[in-house]
Image 1 (cartoon, rainbow, N blue to C red):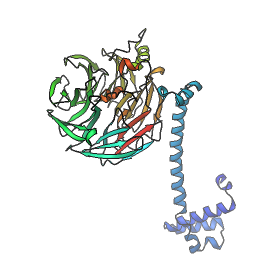
Image 2 (cartoon, helix red, strand yellow):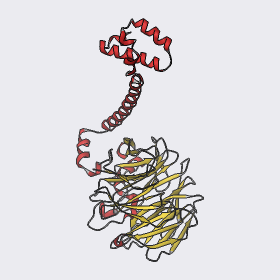
Image 3 (cartoon, rainbow, N blue to C red):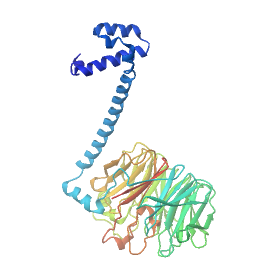
Image 4 (cartoon, rainbow, N blue to C red):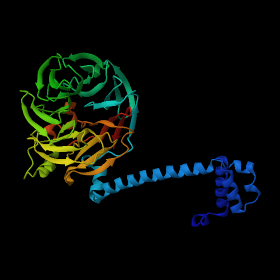
Length: 453
């Protein structure tokens, strides 16, 4: 009764008429008549034609309330997320975030939502010099985008099954695009010649899951990972496989080289990550601890050594000339693990509600970013003992399958083969970390999204 009393006479009248119209239209004449009698209503309440216009009003109001409740819950969740971010920041750090690229983190909504793929997007890669972004998809196609303008430049066809990974790299005067596929091949495309297919590399016996150029001055080699349980190292100029690395006992999902090309890190379905010497193919370490498939692995850039050293309990950080000190892995067990290069587990990061599909260290060294099938990007602060300080909950409308950071602008082209080391060019860059505040992600929603400052 107290609810009715807060309504104005006109609102009461409208509510009563909409209830009567609802009862009448739903075949409840006795209840309708009883309510009329209770209300001691006038002719308006007895006239069927006048009540007709109130039919459906009650249902509309009801569904509006439900929609508004859902919206309120979403907004409350967003407020909580922003409050968490605010709580972990000081006025000084907030000012720094606005001006300091090394403290920049992506925020929603994305600057560009790139649509053209017809099936889930599996991979993205940035050109090391130009504002060019490549994406690959289960639709068998590669797309080339201008990420600054948010425009599609061209579509590349050539693979006969899903494209699983892409990477830019090669010699600095002749950068190429590499792609790999479920069709068992790796293809090399020449951006300087309208992305003509200049070479097709064959040799794997099953789907090729990942491909990366191995950083070197000459840009001579690339590495691939496959469901056939092997890694292969290829000579770019000839397309010959010069080494086959064996050791994993199941599908290898990911591979990434160190910034100097000396080391390779791989991970996969056998729930292990493994470290290899590129020159000798010798196995150096195994990382054991995940309870499901490891989807992604990254090598920490030297800019992250000071903070990761504290987590590891070291008195002083390793030299920035060292290309392999710490790594991170992401798994279907919903966790991220941080390790030292010897295989010691330093930290387990929990928070994702689904598979972790992509990892990338912030070039500034302070954060680790993760992408997941829970549709979010999460930012973990290495300075705050790997606390999750930001969640982009609306990153995509479906599973987020991949994430890459744009390499830093440089006078000399940086090889994008470090891929997940993100444009940190080893010791040369450590005096001043150069950061381009641009991230790209791909998703099962068929979309590529670009987050930029």
